[in-house]
Image 1 (cartoon, rainbow over the protein chains, first blue to last red):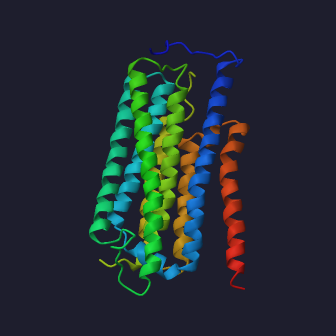
Image 2: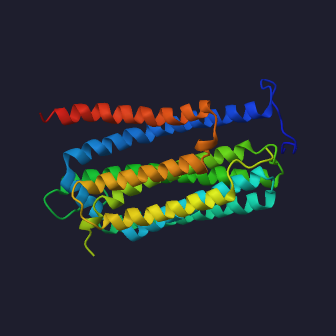
Image 3: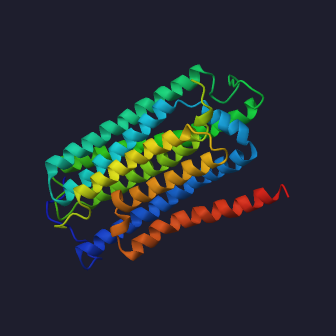
Length: 219
Length: 93
């Protein structure tokens, strides 16, 4: 059943602010482990990018900037609605919290829809690494590494988006059950931190995969 | 908490700046600046990340303990990437 409206102060804490700060600190430590997870991949990208600069820029020039930029805008909009959701929770407006959480979910779904459309276009263009991979030019095998990293990194990011959608949905259910109030809404704040973190990762993915070779893009 | 941590106006300004920076990143991407392209793209991404972490994630408003936790992950990443690159770059020497 839903928790009562009043704040639940667990026995190990002196006061609500201490409980809130502990939860936030825990979330940031979790986010640090996520930085380590993505960090390893960003490191791999950097090293290969340094070894094969021409192939990686050619691969980046092959990206669809319109879809990529639209997705970046969609994700920034979703972060904004998430922030407004946290604001609604802080002032105790359950109706607006519901609205903003739902809007954030919709924008997240738009992102995922565009992302998988892009994957389908890559598939049609034979850009999926493996036996069917095709890339014109001398650097095909090196460009394949670019696309391998692209699929792994954006795929892991998309997986995080799916998890985020699940978290937001559970927040909507808990909000409808009356679990959150102006006094107690820490789960909403933590869900927001996760969502914004996934946004930050995308901002960097956008820069390294879409922007780097944009000046060489053939229209 | 009676008082919201960040005002709606601040959120809106951050949002507008982020969209503007995305447009700027994309626009500058079309210009051939040689090796600078990567630096500009990643640098602007870093500015956007700071805005998101600072305002949307309340980083500018949190206690020192939480800020240390926020920065620790990034600093670890910078250590890892710089030390690894020192190795890879010096292999060509």
